[in-house]
Image 1 (spheres, rainbow, N blue to C red):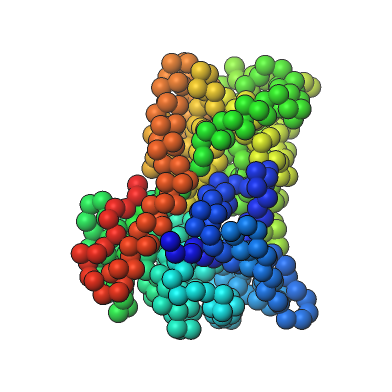
Image 2: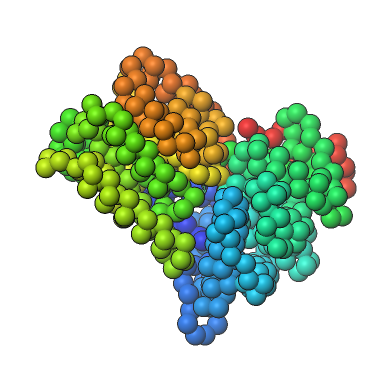
Amino acid sequence: MSRLIIVSNRVAPISEGGPAAGGLAVGVYDALKETGGMWFGWSGDVLSSGQPQIKVEERGPVTFATIGLVRRDYDQYYRGFSNATLWPAFHYRADLLQYDRHEFEGYCRVNAWLAQQLVPLLRPDDVIWVHDYHLIPFAQALRSAGVKNRIGFFLHIPFPASQVLLAVPPHRALVEALCSFDLLGFQTAPDLRAFCDYIVNEADGTVEASRGRPTVVRAFGRTLYAADYPIGVYPDEIAELAKAGERGKPVRTMKATLHARKLIMSVDRLDYSKGLVERFRAFERLLEQTPAQRNKVSFLQIAPPTRADLHAYQDIRLQLESESGRINGRFAELDWTPILYIHRQYERSVLAALFRTAHVGYVTPLRDGMNLVAKEYVSAQDPENPGVLVLSRFAGAAQELHGALIVNPVDIDGMADALAAALTMPLEERQARHRDMIVQLRENNVSVWRDNFMRDLQRSGDAALGRGADAAPAAAAG
Ligand code: GDG
C-alpha cells in the first residue's frame, strides 16, 4: 500500500484521545496510522530572525514534519492572501476582500518554498493529500520540482460562484493551479457545480459528469477529476463523550444556573462568516415577540478567538460585545441574563456534554463549507429526548441534515420563528427528526469521507498514466 502524505497549513497537535483533537484531525491521523505516512505543514511558529529549519518527529508509523515561517511570509501568505483575500471571497464576502499583489506573490512563494521542503522527504509511490485554501498552488509547485506522484486536494471551505471568484484578481491563476492536482474534493454538490461552471464559462475547459463517478475536468492542458466528499464526524464517539461529560462539574454548574430554563447553544470560532450578529438579533426578536419565553430560555454562545490580528476579526468582536451587552441590558432581570457570551475555548468533552444539555443547537453561518458543530450537536443528543437543530441553509451540512429546521440567516423574523418552534416542538417530532439525522451521520462518518477520497485519488493515477476516462475513479461520495 502506498504511503500517505498529508499536507495542511497547520499540523494538528495530536495527542491520542486528547481533548484538543477534532474529527478532521482524528480522521486523518487514523488514515496515517493505517497506511503509515507523514503529516507535513507549518508548525505555527513565526520567526523574527533566522532561517526556519524543518523538524521531523517519528511517532509510531506516523512522521510529523513541521517548519516555522518568517514574519514576512506569515504576513503575506497566511494573514494576507489566505485570510484577508481568499477567506472572505470564498465566503461570499467580497465587501471584506482586500487584495495586495505582493501578498499574492508571497502566497505563491511560500507554497513553492514549502513544496521544496517536502520534495526530499518524498518516495516515488507516495500519495499526497493537500488540504485547504492556503495551499492551492502546492501541486503546481511540486510538479515544477519534477514530482510525478498522485496529488489530491480537499477544499474545506465553500467554492464560490464564478461572479464572486472573479473579484479575486488572480482568479485564473488560482484555478489553473487547482488543475495541477489529480483529484479535487469539495464539501458539497453546489461547490462542485460552482467550480465546473468556472471551468466551462471562464476557463474554456470541459466537464464530463457521470452518475456515481467523479466529474472528468479538462482544462489548462490537463485532465483531472472532481467530486463532492462531505466531511463527517464520529457520531458514536461524540455521544459517548457527551454522556460521560454530563456528570462533570462544568455541566452541573451550567444546569444549576439555568434553574430549569431551556438552553439554546452555539459554538463557533469568532468569525464574520458564522453569522453571529444576525443570530443574536434573532434571539432578541424571539424575546421581543414571545414574552412567554422571557426568563424561560437562555442563550449560550461560545466563541473562541481566531485570527485576532486581522481588522475584520477585531470588528466582529466589538460588534458582538456591543450586541450582547445591548440585548442583555434590554431584557435581563435580577435572576436572569438572556445571553451568556464566552470568548474562550473549552475542552471537547465539555462542549459535547453541553450540546447534550441544550434544547436547541443554533447553527446559523452566513456561509460555511460544512460546519462540524451542526453534526456534533446532533451526535451528542440523547435519542430518547433529543434537542432540535436550527441550521442555516448556507452551511454545507444543510445538504444532508434534513431533520433540522432550515433557516436563512439574514431573515431575522424567520430565525426567531424557528427558535420558537424548536423550543416548543413535541417529543415525537424531535425524536423523528433526530433519527433521520443520526442515520445520515453514521452512514457518512469521517472514515467514509476519508476512504472515499483516498479510493478515488488512488484510482485517478491510472487515468493520469494515460489509460483514459475508462480508468476513471469508480464512485464519487455523497
Ligand atoms: C473549516 C470550515 C468545515 C470550536 N470551538 C471549540 C472547539 N471547536 C471545534 C468544533 C468543531 C471545530 O472546532 C470547528 O469546525 P467547523 O466545521 O464548525 O468550522 P471551521 O473551524 O470554520 O472549519 C468548515 C471544517 O473546516 C471541516 O472541513 O466544516 O466549514 O470552515 O469541531 O467543535 N473545540 C474545542 N473547544 C472549543 O472551544 N475543543
